[in-house]
Length: 409
Length: 212
Image 1 (cartoon, one colour):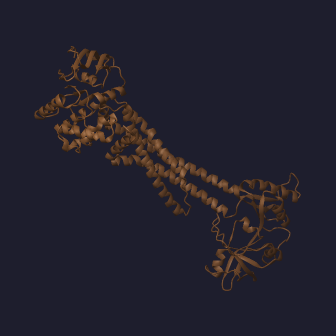
Image 2: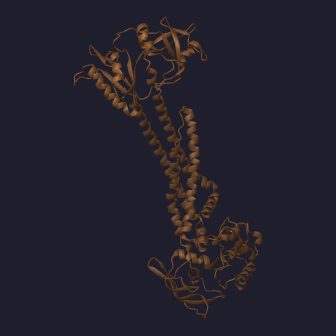
Image 3: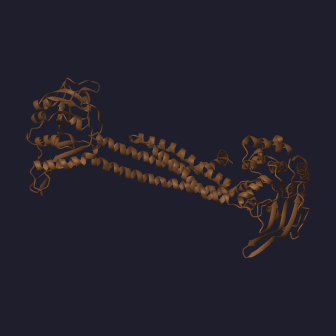
């Protein structure tokens, strides 16, 4: 008896009991579909986290000024400026693990075009800002070092600001906007970036040189940075190294004693991102494990029905043995039946799981990530379930005494 | 069955030597066959008769290689088969023995053709040869026009004919029929017996014995 014949006999036996076969396979179908959908959702969430972090910038570290203590009230980081523009220059040039660095000063002000006005976040910064935040321009150009040195009144608009002040389809490059009644020439428009992970609109912003910011928008001590430093490390692996190197550099520049606290703080966003991704992964694994349990229950369902089937078909087994079926023929027949049930269930489950993942992904607005290895593992696992749970009933069938089996009513 | 019947053993297809079968029922051993010796020659048509409980079925099971004797020896076509394992016995049943049962024992919801094909499936014949031989066997029992009918769509007589076709399709050396007419009316019974006799007498290529 060759495999094709065994398969045909098994298939015919299953088709004879369509409803029962379907219900038996349903356990596996639901199990596999659940695993696929859960992992796809988890991967989607992970991709979403990565996406929102990469929208902030690549391999990003943020350096903030230290805190003030006035009459026992701690002012929070950044409340006392301790980092100077010279510090920024040193970070840019002296730290090997740093690719580039920039400063970000921000405040919210009213911005006017000829006939519209809009309150938005104005950012004063250096030309490196666009590289650090991996932010490209949709139109026009960014400002240059000479714009910064000259304190030129040039502005780069975010897409939302363009929409509010000029309308969605207009090209504002070359026109002017007024910030605190100071006219600025628009030289570029930023590419659309969407929401930050906090739900803020990244595109609701306007970028100008930091010198112009300090001169025209918000005055202050020219020596200190009244904002944060954003650092882009050479690579993701180098972010911890960059963090220690910057710490050493700043401590040295600020002449801190060995036992003194840092008068600044550094946040590693890459670490935060990978920590969040690891958290999501853990939850995904947990969900998949729970789903896998239902696959196991499906396997027990198969075993149950196969046992019923063996009892029901005892006489058939007896007849087959009487005309010359060997133990292995009977074993193969029932094993293949269990295998066909579980494999069919697995394949249908994959289809359903992918469908469910698509539905959920579009409902949550997440990117859909079907992992091929998970699909493959699910199918193989369901086949394994078929073999493991089919083996006992099949062995039972193959060991029947032909005389007893023939006499069975 | 306690007495031995011995026949002239010139070309014995089947020979029992002091075969005993004892069933163990808990602590009690129940003897079903005691020291049975029996020889059946090629071409013989033998009936085994006896009262209920006399051991007919036990003897049939041993002759049919479905069971093994507790002691004694059984030679089938010159080969001692009394100590062979399950799978070897299955092979012998497949090639050498054809069964006809009282209650037909056809596979339910399966066509006559497939029922007759069954021994050939386990004999490892390719599909085309199998179907040709199964059709031929069905034609010999007068059911050429019923090949596609399922067993539950046929009368008892027709079902038993299918069973006979199945018993003969692998050209066995012996056909064992266990009360083949027990479930049939007297007219059909005669037809079935006549059919069996005719098959044994003339149509099969190899000489064989039938035991009813």
